[in-house]
Amino acid sequence: MRELLQKLLEATAAGRPMVYCRLVETRGSTPQKAGAGMLVFADGSQAGTLGGGCVEAEVKRRALAVLPGAKAEVLSFHLDGDYGWDDGLICGGRMRILVQPLEGHTDTTYFARYAELIETGAGCQEAVVFDGEQSGLPAPACYLFDRRGHLAARCLSADDELPPRIVEQLPSLADRPRPAAVRGVAYLPSLPRCRLVIVGGGHIGQAVGKLAAEVDFEVWAIDDRAEYVSRERFPRAERLICGPIGSTLQELEVTPDTYAIIVTRGHGHDEEALYHLIDRGARYVGLIGSRRKIKLIFDDLEAEGVSAESLARVYAPLGIDIGSQTVPEIAISILAELIAHRNRGEVPGRARSDCMEHGSPTR
Image (tube, rainbow, N blue to C red):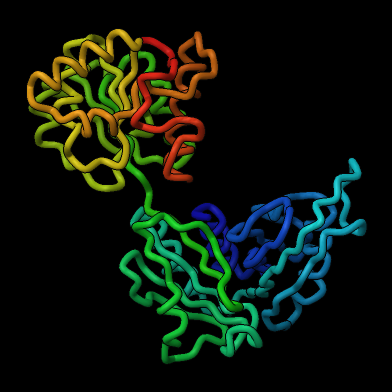
């Protein structure tokens, strides 16, 4: 969404007409889910996607037909045989898409504010009224809320006075909600960006840092060796921190949106890192290594007074078991687990309380 909004703002600044198509409701099987977006330009080119195939081509065709001086409207697409993909696949669902023409003179205050909120990583969400009959509200209309649920901007047919119904139904971003439609209003969250603290700048930490930046984690890398937390090794990291593991982590800011993985070069550093992270309120803490090594660390920490409940919250051994052997494979297994946890709040097939029963790549 960040890249799509940037393209939208650049195009309007250049006076380039386009249609902004955003998917606001889906039912059944569809190639994309609510929140997906696409820009369609007058020359037929596009940015973003609504899933490809014939339905996307039809959206483009209808979007271009309404471009000259048209008003925003909501289009419905039933994915039956008319929209089968080239290989004969028929999804069988329904998509409702808000089609909003934008020209050079269009007021982009709403989109500029939207882009600003996403860029900060704090999170925000749209409430899009797409069905006036169901909602009893003017439609289409868009309301933009910041992380705290305060109104940040409005556009289209949005009332000057915020409808109480929209506020009552607004989900909390702290719960990391999925897109949802309630009585003709679509709630489309852009979730707060999660910080990933990588403790250990070795081969695995470096590989994880590269992939994590690609999937929109805010990467922080920590090591007690300056050459292992260099800009060359972590070119897209937000912060590179060199210092003793224990004291550095003790002073580190940890938020409810923090993910932390411990991939240092040795047993002692791993144990020290876990001791300073385990009860700090991070959303996720993971520890790499063999089950034997992890048991030794857990035993030591219990002897130091760390509770069994706290240890049960640690994801260890770290990473989904995909039979990883190489460093890139291990990094992929770790990122798969982080993404699953970020998007779903859990790792499929794995509960924290029985982490020790599952295999994982070793260092």
